[in-house]
Length: 224
Length: 223
Image (cartoon, rainbow over all chains, first blue to last red):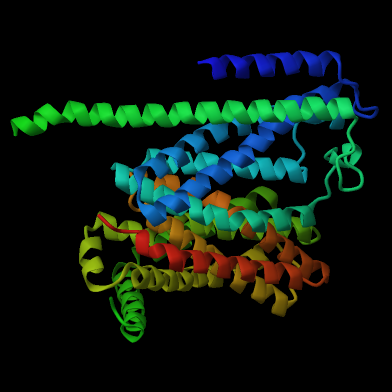
């Protein structure tokens, strides 16, 4: 309860601080500010995918349904954050590059993540039976896990990127203005906390729904 | 658990059974060929001759192959589920041998479709003569990767409610790296540039997915 309010206050406070106190990057101008929302969303997208795939593999090994709950919840949340990252990125691209979408490598990889999440959730939705759904979607997740490095490798060969980390990050290390960096890390922590909280909420709801179903089925079973 | 010898015999037996049951009706092959030729005709009719744009040709060629594969390669597993023959099949062979047998069948099937579609594509689109060695190598390795991926997804999708409807959507994300690399390799051979890097990538992709499949096929059917 307290933690939830602290999380809310943390994100709200750092949003205000980031907008008022942190300076703008010269070339990016006012569009700098999107980074406090866009990069954390993209980070959660990747974190959620890793979390989901990790739990899928764990499910295949241990066959405990809790792993599947985690995999499914992380995929749902990952999709939400992925959409957020795509939209904020696309708006920024319109402002800076003049078009909402032009298959920049970053746009290609986020599109790929959208497809993976969409396909995984569509597949889940179409399989009957808890155990079978968990098993088959875990297999799909494991296969997707294998294809990710290939995409990471092929996409940069196809197009060169205009994505601005070269502007913020010229020599392979983070060279942000310290004030931007503080706000950015604070938002990253905030978003990670948000993800952790939503994830635990989603998993607990699934667990309760399962217990409720079992309880509802109990008298019927006894009657037979 | 079957020994290695008997499981390779099982793979061979499944492949023979697939070929025989397909040959009896030729329904799947006819449908797939018709579909591939329809896609090709639609592309060719809508665009006309494109001989001087080999970059576009490479993309269109793989579109036609991708569509033909997405329309037909889930068939091998869906047929077993719809004909209620999967349980019987599972009694006589391990999941891995069933999947490998079907993979070989899908590979053969895709090859047959390409034997018809690719020459027709080259003629209809007035494509410049390809450099045969890299062109055929790209087709072979790309089709192998395509068959490996779609056999795996086909096995999953056959057990879902959507079956055919979901197959394209669920396979596409996994096929995206493969499609990009195959188009790039085909383009490179038309431009007279080396396609070796893309070919290696395609081969690595096919091998990685085959290895993943071999590890995962055991989990396919447990209920």
